Length: 377
Image (cartoon, rainbow, N blue to C red; front, side):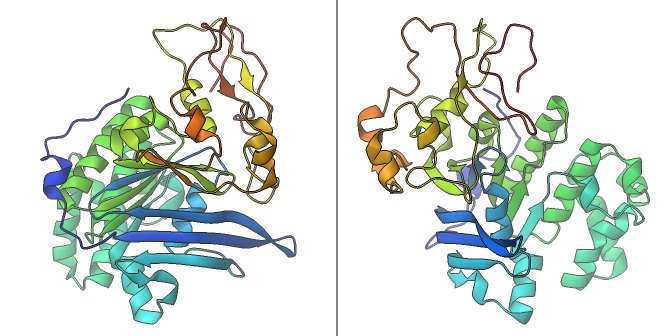
């Protein structure tokens, strides 16, 4: 498992005391206008995030992770229909208007996008990008804002920060530009960071460096973080807790440290077993049948039932509730009380096989088996 170490004090030591959750999402359902109709993209999403903690939102593309954080940030397109609640520090986010909404977006919450180059203005210098929020929202004089920007670039490990302030985005590598995005996100010392797959476009080495910086700054600044990823290993290394999404729903909630060895939903178990292991070479990788689905396309009952090897008729009769499993977490699986602890057991005679999730390759169908040497996710 990938691990990250920083020079910061332990996470718990830097958390600020809080009387309740910083962020509460309760029964959130979102519908977006598509082709003259409203299509469901999130269904009854609920979770909490404590002050100073990191919560991982895990799932495949289209599962609802990014739409969840965009809803929290009030970045939905016109015509969107939202039911349920999003409460930040006890305040209903969708009740915010005018100056209160501006303070929420510009001070309380910051977002780090997965493609840094697509979210920076190519004709503006890095210094202008970094100082804009400081001068606009915190009313800093230009020289003070520039000094703060230099300090921020130094904090995220960018050498010669004065020179970098004068450069344009195209003059920086992807890794350096993502560090700039982190610096911009923490510049106003927000209470909540929304990190939407911030390392997706980076190579593994740069990814590790960027994650060390992000984790260190989250701890040092005492911020909470929603961390979106499809990488279970990364979520386990960075986050305190995890929420697993499938078809616009939360199907599992539990501690990140337990996700790999004790999944609480058949879908999570399939993701865990899909990971190739250096110590275990598979001759064949039998695929989980079917394809990932969206909330709009989800069938009646359990959305995962058409692909689940444990599904019964009761699973298709209605949407399963989130069940508490032995005080370990929550699972949207009716059979989890009897299946708990058995999901990662390899079938008899299949010791050299690792199940994978079909359809995980965008734009194509995954093969039912993968021969040695073939490229896989």
